[in-house]
Image (cartoon, rainbow, N blue to C red; front, side, top):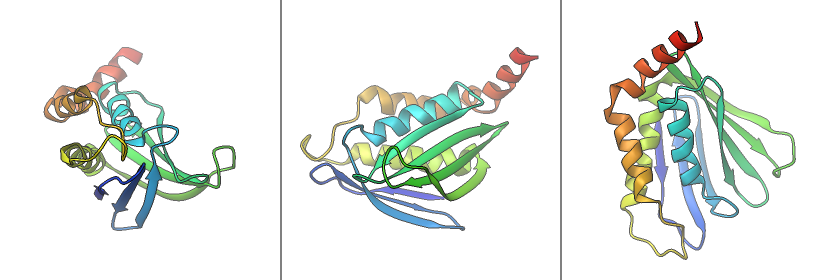
Length: 158
């Protein structure tokens, strides 16, 4: 999987996702929510906290949007991408992919890290909090937060 975030311009961010099964490119808005911050939080929840539910990231295209759903499937991640005409419309399935943490989490982490290195004006896009990047780096470097987190969660439920 390849994930790229382009240079933001006046509240719009080029986004590109490419896998062996699909390619998706769009420009997301930072209104009403910053999807990069949402993405960082979603990765934290699904990876480090080992939740066995769904986390959503809304990429607002004004008025339509994409929803990225991340779900933990034992030691794998599932990324499901939905499209909706607006925030109240029914979602239609765009694509679904399942892979290891390395296959899905790392490309998003690297894209966020690259994005954080860009120099841009606050009027073009909200700056990421330094803690968001620092925390993601810790998740990536800490093996406990991946497979061991799932084992801990499973053991706690038995």
